[in-house]
Length: 468
Image 1 (cartoon, rainbow, N blue to C red):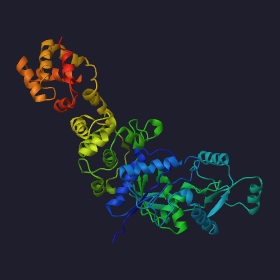
Image 2 (cartoon, rainbow, N blue to C red; image 1 turned 180 degrees about the horizontal axis):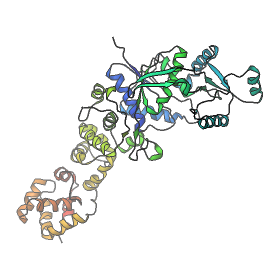
Image 3 (tube, rainbow, N blue to C red; image 1 turned 120 degrees about the vertical axis):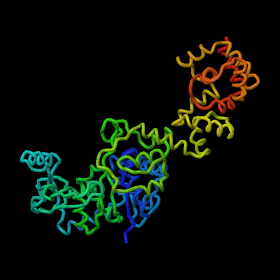
Image 4 (cartoon, helix red, strand yellow; image 1 turned 30 degrees about the horizontal axis):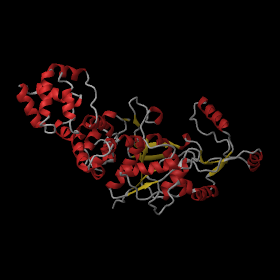
């Protein structure tokens, strides 16, 4: 009988979530939800210099907005609470103490400069640039001398010699590392805080995490963490290292290169369904077509379909999914989504009619501002193409149209019929000049609902402009 998976998302709150972070969270969430498992949210905030409470708050808000709820974690509790690493110091100290008693760690007094020089010497000698073992076998007297000199030691894990560390990666398949290439690594920094290698692995073990999907930049960390979990007597999760998500230039997503955060995408009006459907298909192949809800995404998720090549984030694809997500909104949801772009004072029926009229022509709420101007304010000045259409129609055409609008100001079919009868025009020669005069554009939503929403006298005023 298979055991329900326990997955986790363990972000560091040193900045805002971008889509690379969200894809990692999504894939772990999908794996847990697909098999009725448990999704854990853990905040890895041990870096006091970079972690910010406001980033934690924004992170939680972003995940909730996306619909990526967690079973155990901040605000939800759970058997391994607390789920903020900054509050788990006593657990780390206890585990480190056990390793000290077992002789599996040692104090290292090397300065950063000495470590860097040691690595350069290793490279010059044709060996892997690992820690040289300088402090591995210090005598009590040597340690006392370093202490007397004011050096504060870090704590390093004694990597056993001659071991082969093998695991089956969920994405990259069988992996093998030689322990002799790793070198003793820091598990407690000189300031007393636990290192990433240590706290991340220990918490996975204590929280019963069975599967870890994370970026492939962590692949080389895995053998170290397997050694730690073995030394602590804790089970190791199955690891899967995801191919990086890259931007248009091929570089990993980063704020420095202009990658938008989830908060920024949300502020622009992108919808959760668009973001999740795009990310589901970046680095994960699927035969499923069309916009899928989160439950369907979970049913369709398969770790066997995770790719090894970098996945490129294409803004055009995001726009395509956004368009589908907008069209999938219920009428009241669409009206609420567009509400920030609408003028104040519209009654609910006007809001609903305006939303129904323009939603096929907008990608983001800001796009509706143009159609708000067209309907309730002033249309944009006609561009060159629209001006040519207006000139070709001629003043007599618009005089007839203005006269017809006196009786059919809000009835588009009746207005068209009256102008056709008065001018003999039909097809594009009839419709295009009317559209250009009424909206300033030669394209856009259907005119019938827009005309119904226009204030009294607005249509006649616009048509009359071109009647002389």
